[in-house]
Amino acid sequence: MDINRNQINRSFFYGDLLFETIRIRQGMPMFLHLHAARLNRGAKLLQFNQEELREQEIQAAIQAYIQTHALDDARLRLTLYRGGEGTYRFTHAVPQLHIHSEPLQFEFSTCKTLGVYTDMKRMIHPISTIKTGQALTQVMAGIAAKQNGWDDCVVLNENGNVSCAIQSNIFLFKNGKLKTTDALQGGVCGIMQQVVSDCCDLPVEFGTITLNEMNDSEEIFLTNAIRKVSPVLAFNGRTLPSDFARFLYELIP
Image (cartoon, rainbow, N blue to C red; front, side, top):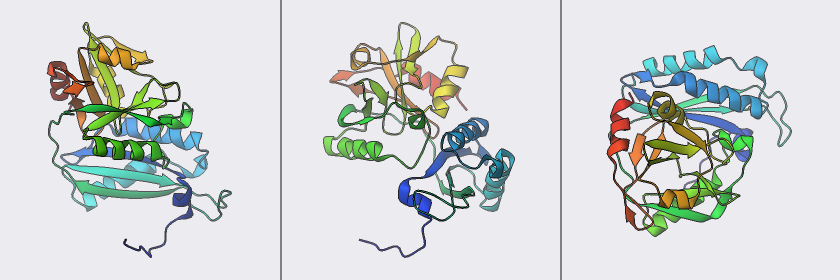
């Protein structure tokens, strides 16, 4: 066990934070306007001090960080936390911003096996649609995936329907149509989920997805801001094609 003696802001003790993970491609933050919009929506939901939260300053800080660190292809994490003193009742709660990055080589990847995690469910609540420090369900799902030899797994909501994967949204492809989860299923409203919906010429239905629908789909693929589109090659003992997912991956910048 490593002991970290660096001071940690009190907000981190309670998961009182928002974050965005942004793909940097050749020095450019991809879909920054969508990340900024979700961050702003999350700040309103968590009742951050809106007078102290200026979107232009956040975007300027990101651009300055990219230039200072000469980022080319990288994963950038933007964390917004409340700041101030106190425990559950913070005083002088001025929003604080932390930016961290790591270099990455982005390439097409697949989910060889997708399992189903059932031990913990995601809560259906507006806060579940944003990225916060409350991610224990996803952590435990990740542990279950490793224990079972899955590349990823479906996480269910409190109604027993599909919510999301560990770090991704889930899409089904069948009969020339796409279906993904809506904001009432307990999953994060994904950046790449929105990009796929906006750029795809096919009809996209947002709604409830059951495990039976997943078993009956022609293709399943996962989306997130870093990997873009990842086809699922096997689910519930069934081998799946990946033609449409590969097409989408090449279509999205």
